[in-house]
Every structure is written in C-alpha cells, then in structure tokens.
Length: 347
Image (cartoon, rainbow, N blue to C red; front, side):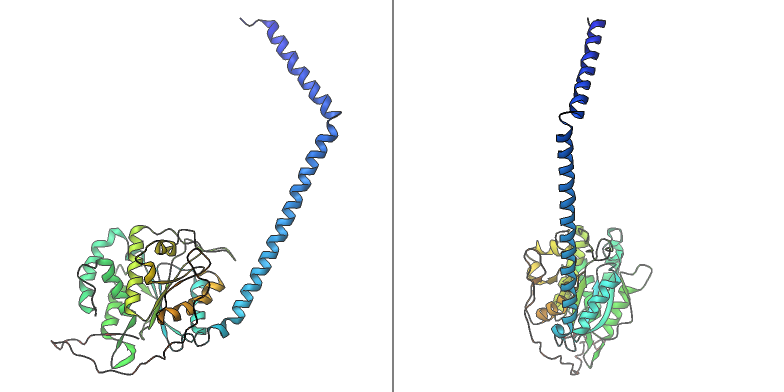
C-alpha cells in the first residue's frame, strides 16, 4: 500500500526536476536554445520569402504567356474556320465568361456561332426517364437518319438535338429544315424542357463545340474544376458527343483542367469513345480557348486528337487547310408517301 511518504518523495522529485530545468535553461543552455530557435525562425522566414518570390515570378511568366497568346490569336486563328457555322452545346451551366471567350476565338477563326444550347437537369434525371421515353417516341419520326432501334433513349435524344441544330433545308442550305425546327421545339418547350436555347436558331451548323460543366465558378485566375460525372450523366453526355460526331462535320469537347475527375478524364479512359472525339482541356485558360478552333478545324479535316498539357494529350493541333464550304441549293428528295422531305445534314 502506497503511504504518505511515497507521495512526499514524488513531489520532491518533481520540484527538483523543475528547478534543474529552470536553472539550466536560464544558465548554460539559455544561449544554445535561443540561438537554435532563432535560427529556425530565420530559416522559415527565408524559405517563405523565396517561395513568395518564386510564385510572383511564375505569375508574371504566366501573365506574359497569356498576353502573348491573346495578342497572337488573331494571326494564329485567321482563316482556320472560314465561313463555318458552329453550334455550341453546353452540358449544363457554364460560366458566361468562359462561354463568351470560346465564342470570340471561333469568330477570330472566321466561324459564326449559330446556336447556344444548354442541357437542363431533365436531360439525364433518372426520375424523368419515363417522360423522356414518351417524348422520344414523338421525335423518332422526324429523325433522318434515325438511330438503330436498339440504340437506346440517350442516343435518340442526342440525335434529335444535333439534327435539330445541323439539318439544313436542301433547297435553302442557309436555313434549318422544317423537321430540324420541329425537333428543337419538342426539346425546348413544355413544362419540363430538356434544353434551353439562348436565341432562335435559324441557320444550320456545320460543326459542334461541346462545353463540359464546371463544378463551380473559379476565383480570378483559377481553374474551374469539373465534377466527376455519374454514370447516367456520362452516358447522356457521351451520346451527345457521338451524335455530334456522326451528324456534323466535326465535334470538339472542351473541359476544365485534367486530373480533377473531368469528363475528358472519363472519356480518355474509355477505349471505345476516346478515338472518336476530339478534346481540349484547360478551357478556362486563354491557351485552351485559343486551341478550340484549331482542334475543330483538325477534326473537320479528319484528324482527331486530344489537346492540352495532361497525360495522353498533345500541346497543339496540326495545321490544316479546310475545303471551302459548299452551300449550293439541292432539289429536295420526296418521301414515298409525299408527306415530308428528308432533312440533310449540313456540311
């Protein structure tokens, strides 16, 4: 049993140790300890100053590169997409400044933007699948060509969207066909529209740019990371890319920085889809936005690729010269029952 003397001895030991520590700290070891702490603080302060200077230099270099690309974009892009009409499809809400910057680069390349279309949540909401199935049944008769019977709901809707943006009236190639206008009306009206259309679409597009959806708007100078797509959304987005690739001259997917679970990350991991779609990462940057028209021109020429600074990407698309656009009116073929002439895909 521990008695009172044991407690006394323990307390005396504690106080002796404390006294020795105070004596040493205030005496022989005072200078050593002080010098060590002072040295560590000075080293940390110096490292912080070096890192701040390095960061400032990096920001200045990046600013210079951005200014150079911005200043040379007109010369670099001129004539890349002469007279092409491009429909811009947004897979959700995209920051206005990023969308406008891509538009500006397309226009610098000689293209015009024929449409801005945004997919709503209803496009892939699992709770609305029955509604989309019913709508799809009404759309199929207006599709030409129509997807295979077993292609699936996503393929049918994607074909309707892309054909609604690209099918021209054969006799008047600068106007949408009647069927194309009907398809867009079905998709964009009603109590639960699948898409929103910024302005009335009157001219058919030759090619398509698809803008992926960032998770949130970025702070000044920072990237807008894209969310990791869930399977249902990924399937719907992939269907849009496939339809755009088959019903237009070319398609480019533009996404945010690689390595943050972007749609491009998912696409490049798909061995079947990756070779079929041209992509540009870093769409939030001046470099990425300037790359978009060059990548689209290459895609139209038949050269597909993945452009950016990430894994499995090339820095710059190849230089190509496109064949001039031919919009010569053509006599419309007639349906066997003479009820409606088939649309023609622009380009």
